[in-house]
Every structure is written in C-alpha cells, then in structure tokens.
Amino acid sequence: MTTGTTEAPGIAAPVQAKDRSSGAVDAFAGVMWPMLSGLIGLALWEGLVRLFKIPIYILPAPTQIVATIGQHWWYLLSQLAITTLAAALGLVIAVVFGLAAGAAITASRLIDRMLTPWLVIAHAVPKVVIAPLFLVWFGFGLQSEMFFVVAFTFFPVIVNTVTGLKSADPEQILMVRAMGATPSQILRKIQFPSALASICAGIKLAVTLAPVGAVIGEFVASNKGLGHLLIRAVGDMDTSLAFAAVTVFSIFGVLLWRLAEWVERRVLPWHPSQREAFLLRGGVN
Amino acid sequence: MTVGGHLAGEIVGRGPASASISLRNVEKVYGAVQALSPLSAELRPGEAVSIVGPSGCGKSTLMRLIAGLEPPTRGDIRVGGAPVDGPLANVGIVFQRDLLLDWRDVMGNVLLPAEIKGLAGLEPRARALLQEFDVASFAGAYPWQLSGGMRQRVAIARALLTRPAQLFLDEPFSALDALTRDQMNVLLQQVQTSEGVTTLLITHSISEAIFCADRVLVMSGRPGSIMDDIAVPFARPRRLALRETPEFTAIGRRIREHFEKAGVLVG
Image 1 (cartoon, rainbow over the protein chains, first blue to last red):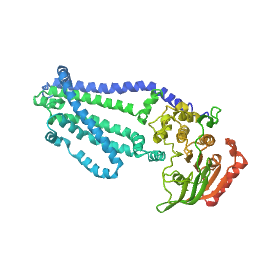
Image 2 (cartoon, helix red, strand yellow; image 1 turned 135 degrees about the vertical axis):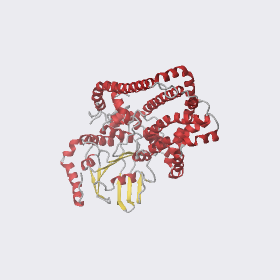
Image 3 (cartoon, each protein chain N blue to C red; image 1 turned 90 degrees about the vertical axis):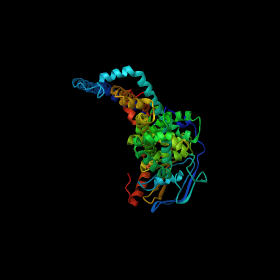
Image 4 (cartoon, each protein chain N blue to C red; image 1 turned 180 degrees about the horizontal axis):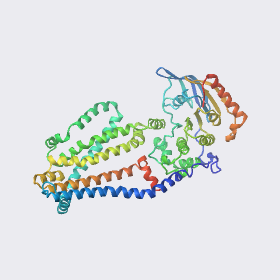
C-alpha cells in the first residue's frame, strides 16, 4: 500500500504557490479601490457643502461631522453602549428562542403546521408601526427595547435553523441509526452540525438587524441610547450631532459584521467556504 | 498490499465470536413493487459471502433487512439464532458513499460509533485501524483533504471500530477508480481474515464478488431471488494475480452465464 500518504500536501502545495503571488496584488486592489472611491465621495460631499454654503443644520460637511464626533465622543459612546446592551440582550433571547423553535418545527410536523403560520404573521406585521404598542405592553425603557429587538431578529434565526436541520444527509442519519443512535444523538451528532453553517448565516443576519431594532425601540420607548440621541438631535436642529450618531452607529455595524464573520470562521473551520483560506495557509490546521 | 509487514490481526486483535445469519423465505414488497421474492440463505459464523447481481435486483434491500433497518414483508431473519427486530447492535456497515462527517477530523469520524454506543477507551483501537489502513498520518485531517480511496478506508475503519460480529458492505467500492478498487479488494480480504467477522459484500462486480468471498450468492433481476450458490475455495491471503488463474475465471464464467441466461447485462 504505497498510495495516498503524500496526496493532501501535494494538492495543497501548487495552489498555495500560485495564489501567494497574485494574492498580495488582489489584497492591495481589494483595499485600495474601495478606499479611493470612499475618499472621492467624501471630497465631493465636502466640496459641494462648501461651494454652495449649505447651512450646517441642513447638511453638515464630513469634517464638521468628524469635529462633532471628537467633541461628543464620550457621550456618543456611552449612548452606543446602552443601545448595544439592548441589542445584545434581545439578540440572545431571539437566538435561544429561534434555535428551540427551529428544532421543534423540524422534529414535529404538527408543531410545524401549528407554529409556522404564527411566526410568518408575526414577521409580516410592520414592526415600526407596532413599536408604540411595545411601550404600552412592556413600559418605558430597556425591556421594551429588548423585546423590540427580539421581534426584529427572531425570524432569520428560525428560518435558517429549520433549513439547516432539514438539510442533514438522510443516509448519514440512516448510518447512525444503524449504530443505534437515539433521536437526541441524531440531532446532536448529525443534524445540528449539518445545520451549523445555515444557523450561522441566520445569526449573522440577526446580529446586523439587532442594533437597528434597538435604535427604533429607542425612538419610541426610551430616554437613553443612540436612537433617543438621534431623535433629540433632530428635534434640536443639531443635524451635525445626528450625523455623528449615524456615523458612529454605522461604524459599529460594520465592526459587528466583521466580528460575526470572524466567529463564523472559528466555528466552521471544516466548511467549504473556509477551504481556500486553509490551502492558502499552506494546509496547516 | 502488506502493511508494514504485519498481518492486521497481530495489531488490532480478534473480534468477539462472530454470529451465523439465517434467512428463511424472506420477502420484501414496497407498495405494489415486489423488491425481493422469497429467498433463503445461511451464512456460517466468520464466513465471507458476496452477493452479486445486476443493478436494482434488491441486493441493498436484502442488506437493509438483515441489518434490521427495515422489517421484511414476510419471512424470518435470524442473526446468531435470535430474530432481528430492530437495528442490529453488533454490525458494522459500509455504504457506497463513505458518509464521513465533514465537521469531524478522521479520528473523530472513526470514533463516532464508540460515541453513539457510549463505549470509552477505543482510541488505541482506532489508531491501530488507521495504521493498518495506511491513513494514520491523516488522523487529524478533515475528510475533504483525503482522496476517495482514503475516505472509504476511513469508513471501513469506522465500521470495524467496535469489533462487530458482522461487517456489511453495500457496493462500497463502486465510486472508486479501478486501481484503487483493486487495492481495496486486497485490503478487504485481509481484514476478513484478521478480524474474523462474518462479512456480507454486496456488489455488481463479478471479480470483486469472487475475490473477497468464501461463497458467492448470485441474484437475478427484479424481483430478486438467489439463482446460484458457489463456493470459492482459494486460500488466504489472496493476491490480485489469483484473478488470472483458470479456476477463478471458471467461477466468473459460471456467474456470467446465469446473467446471460436471465437476459441481464452486468458491468
């Protein structure tokens, strides 16, 4: 038996050699062009505001927004922290509930038929419209925001959990059944790992929706947080502060997305989407 | 294909006493389709039996019935004298697809049956099997990093981990290239000797059926039934050159004549 022992390194080596050289150029192009595009856009914005002397309460220039962020950075970050807390708490509830509901829907056709219509209706209701009702139901403050975040984020988690659990290979299930696996073992050893990539996709969507839900919750049901800050700034005609809040919020959203992607890579090192990166690292786990 | 000069049995040790398998008038009907017409067969403990037949003749159905994955419509199946009424505990199954779990490394895949059955301390056994099958250096690799032949060897190691009394293989090498398939045939007949398991190999390759077995059962087309029962008397260990001997080709001709008479073309 002499075949096989050197196969995988042999597969990895040429790919690695080819991609390393072009990889650096790609990485440069991948960062440079978006940066350049962004700078041009900001320069145009700045130029137009100054050229037409647009008043700051209508549209502040990028430099004015940066100055406002610098001036109010502590206030902005402390309000962001409050928004983040509401988003995080709501997200945790939505993920736990979403996973459990997804598992129940997959496990039983009856539960599927009875629960799914409610979930679809709950998702179809325009949430911004019912936001004031949360104020009535849960009162003023964090808990209202939190449940609003849940309403905003549960659906992608459930849908992706169900899709993932149903995508498990029936032959793999037959195989572990032949080994004597219990339904709970089939769920833990086959169905859940098969679903993990899909579940991660659902949670990633929820992660980006959660702060949006928290901010809308703060519009109506809070006197704290970025959402409240935004409403107040607009009311005060402090457009520069409103833009500062939006900027901070957007940067936070991008960082959150990056964080979710990073976590996903840690959780799914075996997934096809990670294989190219694995080969580029030289085939080392 | 000798592995480090060892016979496998010296490394991994023998399994428990293997069991006999007996089928009496076993029949399977799916709705209006008769998949298996009544058939009877006996497998002695430790015997290696191949079932060869054309595609769709009910070979895989027969295996699922014996493994207790499905009940027969009629008839009686006994393993070690006891009637089969659910998935057999003491069987290792190798399917046509290797069914390795993408999210587990090779070692994790081989240890899967131990986890399911709640058995501890089988890591040395797993390591010895991987060594025997020449994939030990890939113990920490993920399945996608392995070639088709290596993946199927890992699947066989997984099936053998808990020292089952029976090893069932359902067209295990159909997806492999011819050269790899030959190597797997040598490996399989070596494992049959070293592990002493009762082996049931389902295949549509006549030469594979003969090479890996002490006895070949020839199945007809749909609905499946057994047309012939041929003893394969060659000593073990067997070498691939055996397939060129007149005795071997004579058995092959006898099987092929059955298919020609039945009007089925066999690959």
